[in-house]
Length: 256
Image 1 (spheres, helix red, strand yellow):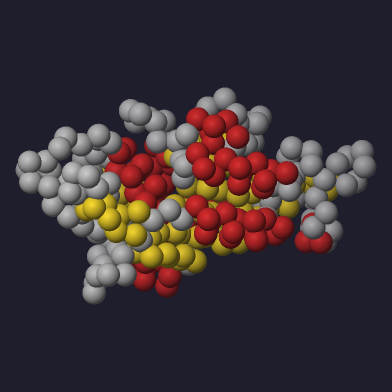
Image 2: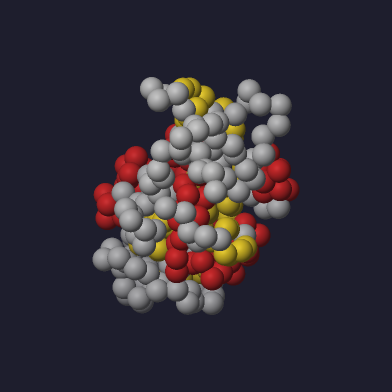
């Protein structure tokens, strides 16, 4: 297997294995172990050669990844993202999660969802809930944490490594549960924005944290102007508009 060329950031990466490692029998016992020394009992390892390529799955919170990439100043090329992980390890599956408004005849997010579904991703959507806040602004709420958690736990038995694109602190318990099953977890988000876009407890819980900025050269579609996370209040509040790359933003764009 080609070793990863990326260096993990943060204080919770284990050793110098990069994101992806290999699996081989213990020299003493002959029992197959992963790089953390955890015995592997799945049948697929019993017929593996001495060096076994990691089985991984990628789970992407679409809105979270979009917000992080735009804050860093680039748009994600999802074809390149898929190719990158296929080069690094044996990719079992790649999931993309997003919420969609069903009240609109046409959602600008639909072309991206359709493209992903035809190009190697398992797309999971859920109805978004629309409401108006106290200031009269249109808001859209659509957490995909539960959908992601169910898929991760269903697939864990067949994996060595779970990669999650999200900074949501609500996923910490999911990460802990996966780790108890002997599977490593890498979380990808960014701390190079103010404030950071990953919850500190999620970052601490993960086996490894990779800053999205370090991955950008492999998955960038185009450079864009970095977007600050805190927007000023517009004098003319209007409805938020989703785009193929942008699930419903928390704040409307300001007029230029």
